[in-house]
Length: 94
Image (cartoon, rainbow, N blue to C red; front, side, top):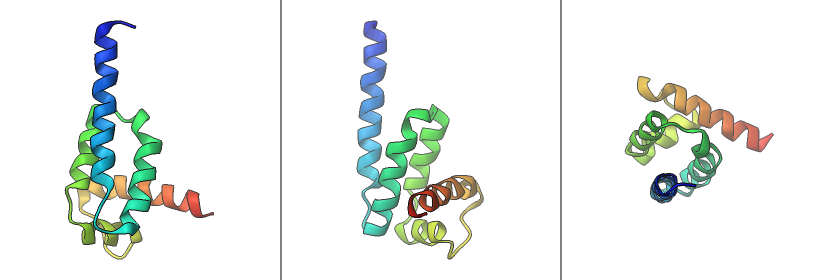
């Protein structure tokens, strides 16, 4: 590996660490959904998907909970991500 590749991998590890910290919310219900989802999907995320997930995490906890539980319709820009997370949840409880 080159130094540049090592540096990129270090940056990705730092990015993942920061995002995992951000998945730790004020609601345990969100913690047990978002943290495993990120752990499973991060490696396949491109920079656009990472930025989108970060934007998702900037939303208020009650909104995230309502969207993920299907109580409310998510904002348009988060509908696909919310659906992906809900499918992740469903796959874990079946």
